Length: 68
Image (cartoon, rainbow, N blue to C red; front, side, top):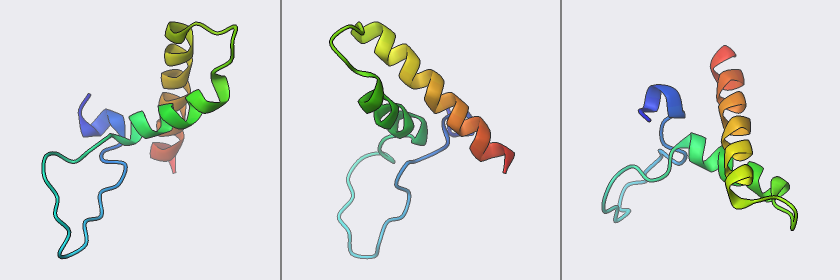
């Protein structure tokens, strides 16, 4: 996804003197999905279902973020 739909970089602030190698890191969408997954995972939830639900929550959070 591009930054228009994924919320951009989750941690975009780079301080002077930091050694940063590579791209912008994880997207805000991925970060939100990771947080949601922590609440979703249990012994009865398949990994595929947990991942799908996590990104559904992340997408809903991004919609709310854009509406403000």
